[in-house]
Amino acid sequence: MIYLDCNSTTPIDPRVAEIVQKYLIEEFGNAGSRTHEYGNNAKVAVQKAREQIASVVQCKREEVIWTSGATESNNIALQGLIEYGNKNNKRHIISTTIEHKSILEPLKYLEKKGFEISLISPDETGKIKSCDILNELREDTLLISMMHINNETGVKQPIAQVAKDLLNSQVFFHIDAAQGFGKDIEALQNQRIDMISISGHKLYSPKGIGALIARRRGFDKVPLTPIVYGGGQERGLRSGTLPVHLIVGFGLSAQLALKENDKRDEYCQKIKDAALKAFSELDYKINGILNDTISSTLNISFSGLDSEAVMLSLKDLLAVSNGSACTSQNYAPSHVLKAMGYSDEECQESLRFSWSYLTEKPNWEAVALRIKDLFYS
Image (cartoon, rainbow, N blue to C red; front, side):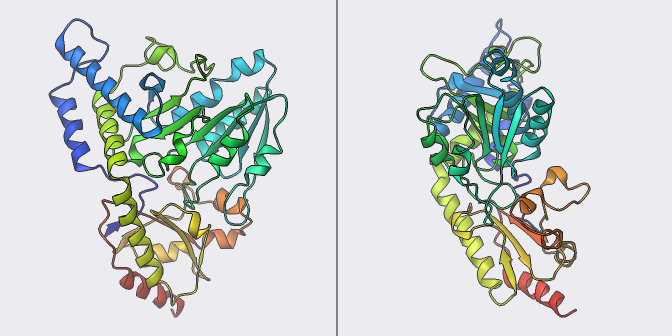
């Protein structure tokens, strides 16, 4: 069985696993320990990893704040601006209806705290129009928060255009880049993006490590306040003992992603092209916009076939999903596809295939035959 659920979590690159093991077993020092070489070695390794992460998005290493993953990073980016927003009478936030739950749920919390939330819906292709975001800007707008690449459809969002529209604005701009960091690289190097949330387990690192990149504007830091208090690590914004082994692994993942990006993208695109060729004689629909989707994702519906039935038929060939892993314990129609105008029935037909440069090339012809049999069963 071939694993095709990489948007949920990727496998660990063997090179990353090797260095994680080294810092888990041999170099196990606490980066906060100042009195011996174990602590110093850990500190040096953590700083190197910051530089590796920073190089992907062209920021300074001190602008990289370690977290447990993009969910925590998103919460810091949103909740961390509450105090500033209240103090400066800026309580309006713009986001979209296709965001991950780690954005939508904190926004509900902020709404209870007196903030006004404007959510923009996509067109039928799953893409947000930058002009729709621009039209919502107000004098009291504090923040725009949107995703880089949608986790369900793989559709790239117009973050470069929104950043351009904000050049003469003081509104903070936050990107949830869990799916795009280290894959669609140039878009995140835009210096007008103030904050970027990233996760290691979407980029061939272990689960449990991520970062919030918070760029300075000149000498001014993003005015975030912590949502967790403790020993004051990470410049007081995110307290807690640093998981050095995870950080080092994530740093190496970032370095490899930058170095190998073109080769990885080419390999992933070949897998997608082969899938579409094999499916060409089936009655299917692409959920999203094919020519503006990341090369490693395909969200597709086979007309009249329930996704659960298709997954059951393919269970010995492929591991796939029909939605976000964060909401898959109790299946409900995808809020992303619903925002695109899909009916409950259409949502129930959708399947998400997602792969990586570590994925063995599937036998798509065998997959297509299985699905073809369902049409006649």
